Length: 34
Image 1: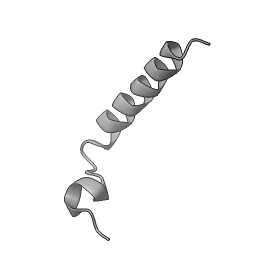
Image 2: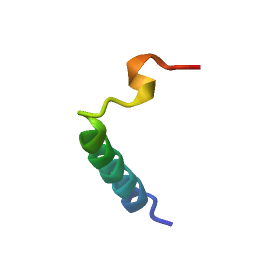
Image 3: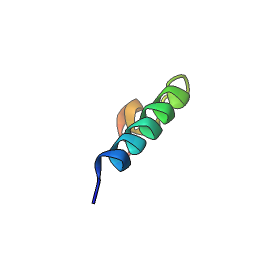
């Protein structure tokens, strides 16, 4: 079972999402409202 490709894909998705949400500033980054 090769998990590396899956991890790489997840990392790519995460990095892309972070870049997309960078200007939006996620609520968790703003101040963890809870």
